[in-house]
Image (cartoon, rainbow, N blue to C red):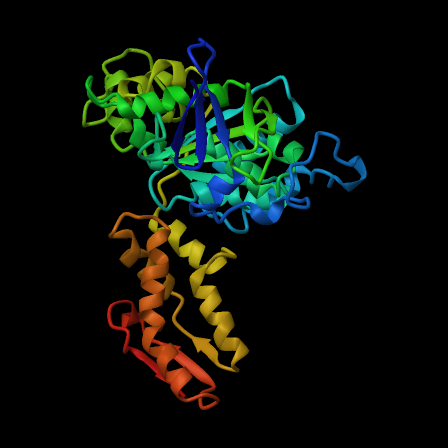
Length: 389
């Protein structure tokens, strides 16, 4: 007699006493019951139903030149020139050279631009993508999400165009949180092992029907899906330093001189020492380390980046006929204040929002009254230090 077990967003069938492996069905109805990812949806196409593998070639957009993509992305991402090029190259390599697998690991602390870099690239390439948080996934899916739901999220963000989804990007953030730092800590490493069937390239059965009780199935080929893992990996540099036999003073016990690039490079063996399973690490093809942003980098983000929160405030004031006046040293003051919390560019928004809090109130309370707003350097610490005139 058959038994049906239900889990979040999927069904698993155990049929009679046979030795067949259970089928995993990810239903669109089940997926709608949970929060949808808010990324990548705008880059898909289709009419909401699963499409076959025969997309009209005339409707495909030509891949932009790699130099143009790099130039455009660098208008948004500051302080990561080499890393942006590495990530773009890895994605273009996966698209243009199908026989060369590209599973990428990007290591960097919070606020260094890991996620935003990929978002900007995917946006310009019109590639469907999904950004997943590794911490919400479990091995079985009974108490959290099942890793195979990543596939359905990608398909959903491609508007159910299966060919686009099969050539899309899955970004898995906080992957370092699944490392097993202790021998008994196996739950996280088991999730990483369960990802192998996706990152190795295989065919997964998923439901093609809106009805969770329909048996209509389609094959989803993961061979051309680009997998990008993100993580802070706090403490990994200590493992690297130990491998290099470097003491706190910076001297090495080896006789062989090493250049800076050799010293800064993380190796797969460092990740294994950190607690990542060997089977998982062995399938990482490219390791990229983001720079830790300096005070100068944060200052340049405020001045130049198209994502700058300061520039957005300035533009909003300009729309209302208000000129913003400030000392050029203000950017350094904001950067220094934000740097103290060690969250990279993320803290810039908090600092700048604090600065403009009272200014926004005065402008909204007295519309069309002011033509100029002058900021004092001390406004970074005291948001009453401004003059509206």
